[in-house]
Length: 228
Image 1 (cartoon, rainbow, N blue to C red):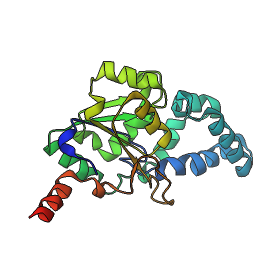
Image 2 (image 1 turned 90 degrees about the vertical axis):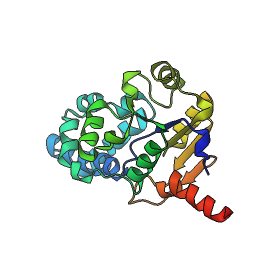
Image 3 (image 1 turned 45 degrees about the vertical axis):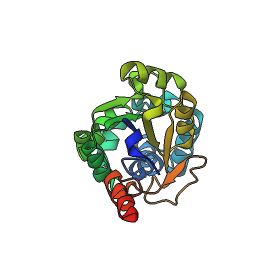
Image 4 (image 1 turned 45 degrees about the horizontal axis):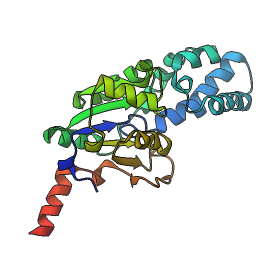
């Protein structure tokens, strides 16, 4: 699927890729509406509708990912509310082994996420995945989300990489298209980012459910066995 001998840099999304998207979906669709309804004395369904409308209005923009903006919009401390359900933050299956094997092979591991720094800090505290990563970059540093070509231009200036010898793994076809437009050659889509929901279509990109399908050392061993 991926010839790892041709890869120098592995660009990795966080939410829905290394981490189970169930935490984020639960927070935005259930926990935040509940807390909003309680705080502002409105019906739960009204709170859900209001938040859903705001999500649709901001989708794909940097504000969509900005917890400071959401705190102001909701008149709530959104980072604090995330702490209330942090027990739901989980690493996706085989992700740690995948990172370990890539480090053994000497690949440069770069986390690129649209997550706001406050949310990013919480998830790193809970999962400790940063111990396997070389570089961590939030799109808020560049003032542009990964959907925007300017993000990729800034990334190249901050941490130079060869798009021809890089693989980018994300759960969003929309964001993968942005990387493709920039010239990243190898693109992989996580098809089941939320463990509690069905898989989604990854076309036209390579799709995987879990990282065991990409494990470089395991798959190299399987290839060697077939040849011998």
